[in-house]
Image 1: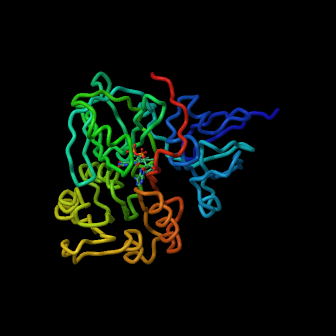
Image 2: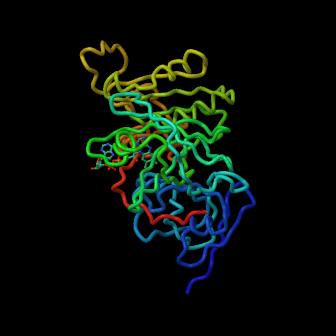
Image 3: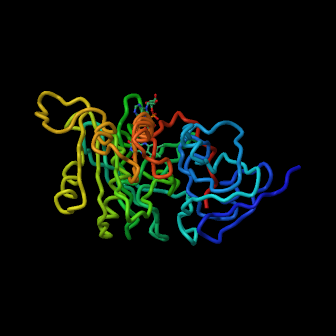
Length: 347
Ligand SMILES: Cc1cc2nc3c(=O)[nH]c(=O)nc-3n(C[C@H](O)[C@H](O)[C@H](O)COP(=O)(O)OP(=O)(O)OC[C@H]3O[C@@H](n4cnc5c(N)ncnc54)[C@H](O)[C@@H]3O)c2cc1C
């Protein structure tokens, strides 16, 4: 039988023991440490952390890490089991644990159609306790059959505990269609959150580039609303890729950021403009447009959210142009057929 190993969090005095057979994330959560996480199955990458010292092993190679990320020392805490004492560089969510995920009822406040296939959903969660989260994080809907659906929070936390989401209705999809077309006004759903590790890192000296695909705009919207309200002044460049002009469902907001803040640039990119769009803007794949504009990505922080294929392509292509894995943050909008873990009990 092995012995426990001591894990340290770089730049802090946090340290804790991981029992033999336990993952680093399970040990951290068991002790109430606010480590970022999402699916807990190695798929979403929310619990990525830089291994600074020591070594770990996995039962199976974690899907969310590319070879390049593994070579750069990135690990997935939800799957990693230490082979030795180890030190990780990971940003804990909050010192006091108040960002721990909770299960809550959420009542539908409103449903507003934003585009032909996108709806804004507003949810009211109980006001007894503030529902706090980091802009960029997401929630899971907990379905009666044990399934889950993940959706990003599209606006920063607020005093009213109202959550905003932007839901795309996918062909053949069951959940969004049910929410949009079938549920009564005021219906109550169960959610779990906040989840995920997609949030703005402090790096005052480096410009940040945001690459959104489709409703991947939602978490970036929350981040930028929050950063701009806080007076963020470093260069922020938003690329938003969709098929045609009608899919730019929140373009006015993004344009207003660029108009009102000298440090913000907004580049909408259409992959498949309609003839009626009379589009004179950029076209093609959104990550390639960003790559054209930043031939040297070595001094950038890049945030990507949207379809997994976009996230993978952005990591690969911008990586070839010097983007460092440790400065790449992403939320891959995996479909719900990915196996999610059993539900945690209510608190
Ligand atoms: C961390 C995270 C955050 C997310 N945030 C958002 C968000 O803010 N807004 C949003 O709209 N989505 C978001 N998603 C994606 C969303 O959770 C999935 O698309 C979900 O499966 C949709 O549920 P559904 O029941 O409507 O469709 P499902 O019943 O799950 O899907 C039915 C069929 O459609 C396919 N399918 C599902 N989703 C897609 C898709 N996006 N594109 C193409 N085919 C698809 C499936 O493979 C399946 O065959 C997020 C996902 C993750 C992991």
